Image 1 (cartoon, protein in one colour):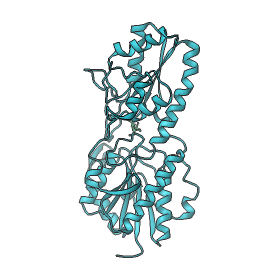
Image 2: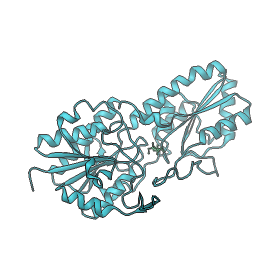
Image 3: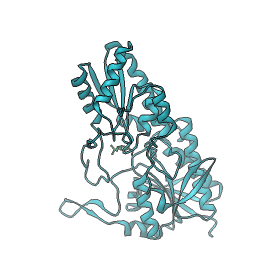
Image 4: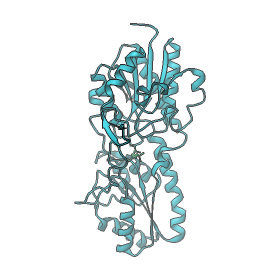
Length: 365
Ligand code: F6P
């Protein structure tokens, strides 16, 4: 094997706190081995327009570990197998540009791409691996919904931000004797809602894994009143749905977007609570605040470990695997499996049992 490898790194999908820590660790660990690292900007776009490639050096990445976002930029509209591009008359049409990306990768003499992303980005990485681009995947998502890894970086920061927001809602809810309904992210999994809801002492937590009824939610709110608590906090995951109902979505979102946009359930729940209990109720959507800001210590550390492990795996000759956190170590799992299984909250998980023991309602009893 060539001892002076040229490795590339890109970040895809929604950003998550810790992306820059991965970029830092990859750069430093590769430099120590005498390899070159190239940052590919905006997902795979940098391999279409190669002006969007930067040589990453220790000087370039100095001080980025604590920064949110990603110095490489990202996109969740950049499927190279179906990329929206303007044609000669200015209309947008979708084209397969994967061949161009692959040939640029080879022409630049790159040996391996470290693809940092969630399920969508890891699926794309797997398709490129099948076309012959050597890949190491690194799992990223605030949703924590990838089954092959215990945690993804970004999740802890999102939960911390949500918990802080819920903490702040207690005083205003109490002052006005209101019910505050806060909608958090997580897509089809309830991890953020569950962890921040328990930590923030919510009265009700609604998650996609447990369909709820409004009767049960309102019963909990009214039960609070009987016990002298005249306000309530409800945490709703964006993917939660009423028993027999549908997830509320905002449709397909922008052109070229790979996944449907979720959102709106918090407002619906708030209106129903007001209608059924007469209580003053307000809703808010935490939204992208959960993806912003500096990564927590936990996320920095796990992101640095993911990045360093990716480089170690390359050195060991691993290809087309994703770095998975299976404590106490990082292990390689085949890319083909990495994004396929979603990790939902198990109904018998200790956190669910704990929440029930604390008197928190999931709107199902
Ligand atoms: O997957 C991460 C995530 O933040 C989800 O929790 C959320 O549904 C989605 O991305 C939002 O995407 P966008 O940034 O396109 O609004």
